[in-house]
Image (cartoon, rainbow, N blue to C red; front, side, top):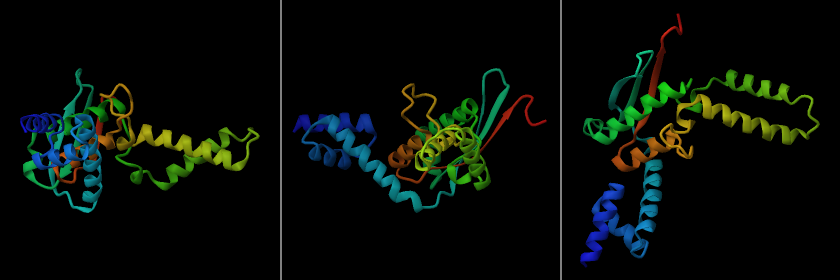
Length: 201
């Protein structure tokens, strides 16, 4: 059973999951470490979805000033307990989100925050851009929704590709969901403010 213990140890180091979860994952994956990692990721994201209704009343407000002191960010990220708020993993998430805001300059935290009037205005602009194209209405609608998804990916923090992932596959929302799964508490990006020298005078 020494090999089983070593596999559990390696899986814990790679995922941060508990001993019993690691044993369950290895059994499910028949001892395949990569399969067990995938099992834990899926279970973690499913658990994160279950926690979506829980209240997050603790957390931190943190600041980030970009080198050169021309861009600064304040961000509030919530969790359920002070214990989690003080962990290194939570603090790292806060730093990553603050750097994302500094670098990518989102306008909103999530799609829910975008006013309906702004969304309709974007739709109207896209419709006018394609006014001279001879395409069926349903095709135009599909193209408009695609352009709108791109707008969200640029303007909404949670939809943005994470700046530290060169592949562009990880969104900020994925980071938050992974943190919720790993820490066992609901993690929420509440709000942010971005300051840039010379703006908003």
